[in-house]
Image (cartoon, rainbow, N blue to C red; front, side, top):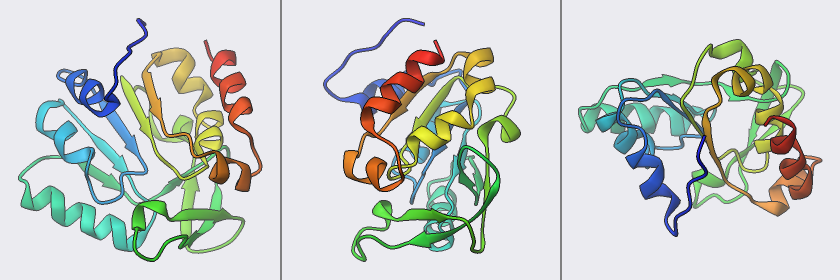
Length: 171
């Protein structure tokens, strides 16, 4: 696929989804999900945090759009996790602590057969999400937009340079 460059990735992301099936991983309360759902044929939003997932559902309903909310975490392997509040004033900065807890964690390879676009904002778990999506990425060749929060990526045991290596391996 052609590489897209822009000074505002949100605008490119939204403009490229018209007839697509975008997946929003780390959807929070719907800032990206709702515009995607207005123009895409199908949108799936993953949000593991129970409070944020409920706000996401309400925002989808209030805006009269169709999007499927899956209250699950995504990672390299299936398991359990608990939500970690990093900034009480910003639920978008919540992260997951893998190992035990009430939140189900699955891989994208388990969840999806196809995706045209992956928007991944998982507060440092982006490399793990991509690892769990290797089959999907190789077969569907989706556009991938992901946040790079070096401090959080490091806190989850990876490095930004490893994220670059991982995406190169998937090409």
